[in-house]
Image: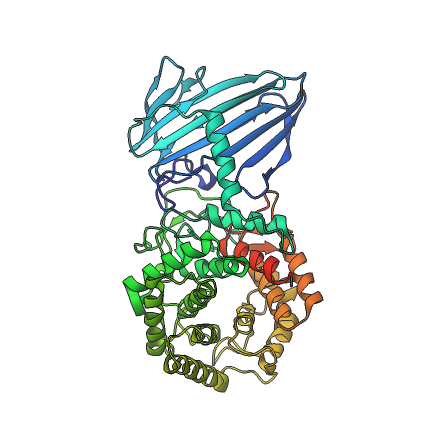
Length: 547
């Protein structure tokens, strides 16, 4: 957990080999029975079965939030009427990646602990009997049968100038927050999954409107392969995916937030729009190693090289987002101005090489150009006059025509670049987004090629890296499975679309959250989580496949 912002240094970093932990553990022999998020929220319920009964713990970040303060709620419950809950609680707040221990521990007359951790102020209520041990606080907690006990941890950039939160009131406000901000989604194909996806997307979105790509950093895609990244930043493409998915269901606040953040970045940077930003709009730092062991099987890194890349397709995705907003009459004045800048940027740069959706080397990526064509066709319908509409359509036609001369294989499918004949699962999206009509033979040929070359057990891989079996190079990409569901749906293959949706929406862990990859052989999640683009495309499938 990083405070005060997603890209800040951590307070709890044991996941990647650092210091800092907040652990609630039964004292009796136990095993984890399971856990789940309460429906349509990010309120977590954990459950242990011990030798003496059943214990539950309800965890949440207090909502609505405060940019300078985090409030962690934990409610321990002895659920059985005749058996107590006996637990040990450890709290070690550690400032930064280097792990500066807490200091100046003080216990107030009311039993509340206060201390400093780096530049942060900490306060912990409900732990009056805790004892300091080696710069951490330890508590032996006994909860009477059928009763509960609240622990409230606050971490702030400023000294506390307000009274202690009342747990019942904060819990009630937090539950109400999630009820109010997550739509019911009862009109979708999978209401519970759709609600949860919306809750995850909302939870990854800051007060600035920026949505981070994932909540974690340095969780490896493949052990010992060096592919582990810091995803605590806002990717323009991911936010456009999320906005389009939300807009497919209705004019919900997450659509407005996406439009606002993306428009602000375009107005600020124009044709030099970056693929990713800090949630506050600044530049993502370059990738560098950290002096930590890292998650098992990987090294620890901070920053991301994608922040300095040119990725052409983000311009097309921005137009698709703005067109979706316009259909709901949610296109702001600033976004309308951004539309003009995006069209000008595509005109100026569509013939330049870029890093593409998978953030690889600079090439003439087919997907990037076709997504720009899709965005131009989509935005043409809301242009103010016929001249503007005709210009967008002519530019889209020119892009498609140029790409068609160099990037169509002998079997009629799109290939990755003019010199790379491999197919790519991302090439399913231009057909979904309207770069070409559903009847276009290149769309059908691409679907067939992707199924033939990149499918295993109902999951899709991005592309073939080399001559190795697909699963030896990387995991399958759940987002690509959802892309196939959308592609089949657009082609009118309703049953095939449902099969792909059902197969891939089951590729989550015990938390119900999606990671970037799913290991088809070992049936395990790979990479950082929860992953924005996967939850966004899953939500879009749940909406669009309903009809």
